[in-house]
Amino acid sequence: MDRQALVGVLASALSGALVSAMMWFFLQRRQRIDRAWAQAVLGTRRALPRRIILVRHGESEGNADSSLYRTTADNLIELTDQGVRQAKAVGERIKQLLNDDTCHIIVSPFERTLQTSRNLRLAIEKNVRHTYVEPRIREQEFGNLQGDDFRDFRREQTKIGRFFYRFPTGESGADVYDRTKAWWNDTVIGINLRPGYEPVDALVVVTHGLTMRLILMQLYGWSPNTFSSVWNAGNCAMYVLQLDESEFARGLAPYKLDRTQGDFPASSIDVHVTFKNGQPNRKLTLSDYLSIPAPRTTYIALQSAKEALAQQHGLAADDIDTVDFFYYRAGYSSEEVLPPKKFRSNQEDLL
Image (tube, rainbow, N blue to C red; front, top):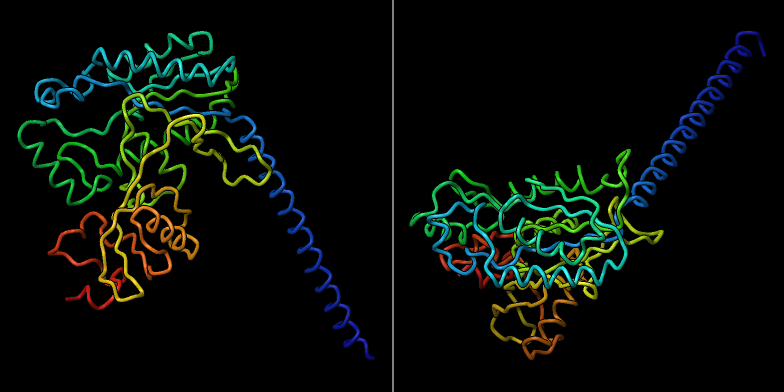
């Protein structure tokens, strides 16, 4: 081999070795970064409050008399006597859960939530370390005008959907979702990581029915269609989010909605059902929609929906062909408007 060829072989070998060394270096660096990120995530998880308790305010004057909204600002509406009793009762429920655990209270600045917080706190005074008034978990802003026009706005909202409809000079459900998610990421995730502050075992969040649903929506990745299926919580209902501390839990804040410790959201949705045996298509209400495993476009979800519909409506699950969760979604449920083509079950829907 002549000298020039030898130089070429050596250069090629050196180049290959250099590339291999660089790949090894970057691989090691990536592994160190991945390990550091995993340790950071685990550290954040370990610092999270083990329990988050979401509480809707007690019965308000506006709940008892909806005409009050015409003369009183929404944020100034107070609790009724029944609402005070409900707040004290939910405080006792929370005390049974907490035992000696410490907690912070985070409360919407509206008068009905502040009064609920003050009354439920009577039972958990020894547990509470601090109360934070948080504007981002306030009620949806319905706008400055709530006279006769408000009923027209409500009818428009029914057509468009609670999540997307924005009231004039007010907010849409999507607007409330954005500030609720910002509060969760900014406050809940790091509340026990603040230097100089004592970590707590639990958070008691006193807020509003819509806000509670949107907290769950951002936490579990619900679609607007799923959100619209969930009913508003009752006055002083409480949803308990329990931290999943298992090794294989997913996400930065793996909380599970615990049916055994608190209330569970009611949910229902109208679905379009077709049959294998020639029966005409039917519109059926599927109750406890949240029990259908997500994502709800899978074969497992379809089978679960068939079994639930069969049990709720006295049908045979094997006779059901398809279940369309989107057919009657807000904005497509009137007889004049057909669903989008990709959601139409068969050619009969085109007639």
